[in-house]
Length: 102
Image (cartoon, rainbow, N blue to C red; front, side, top):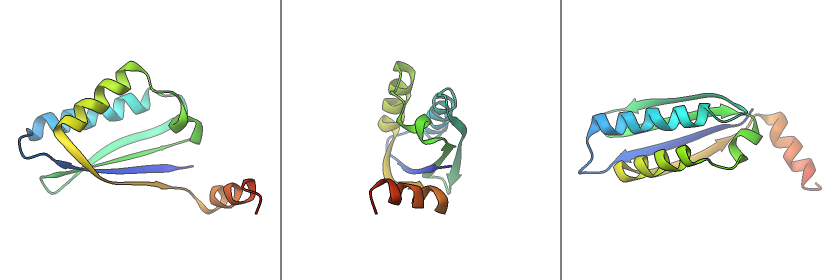
């Protein structure tokens, strides 16, 4: 099961409460997508929000709806994404490797 990890750093003029609410709304938008099992956010210190989303690959590649687009822009107005990673377990990584003809 793939896991996506995003790290966002608060913009200087952004309110911390608004950032927390935007991260929560982003998690709710992800959980509304079919194939997503879990979407949570965590505070790291006072300036950084970490989003952790787990689900089937189809849940990540499904077309975005209007609500997801709205909350994505809301979060982008309050913070800049400094890091993104997609983590997969070894079995899925090996399957992808074999699908590539290796």
